[in-house]
Length: 148
Image (cartoon, rainbow, N blue to C red; front, side):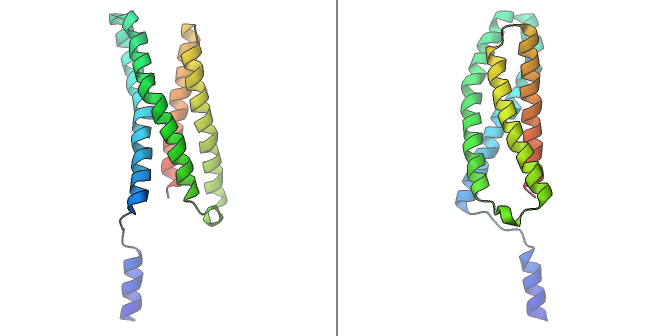
């Protein structure tokens, strides 16, 4: 009786991830902080920068892109790495649906961000930026939901 109770309790005790899992997840979270967090910060800065110095806005956006796109690549690569660690047969139907929605939104945020950088009119720049930022936040939230 005592041994079975101890084993039951110890199976619920949190444990440390392996070093490789820790590196994989840390890289993924860091890249998400740059990609998603950077978009949020930039969205907050744009109105003020546009009023103070419109010509600087392009330089700021270009500099952000130099950090954001590599972060997006790291997100995709570590996301694939994360997916390779999942036993999909052990996941629920609902989990799979959320995972698929997340994958679709990853494509949406990447494509919308690309179109944002290529847009010429202020309306299209704003529209694609909104789609990119909103879908990036949705991907982050869905990622939290599927981690269980």
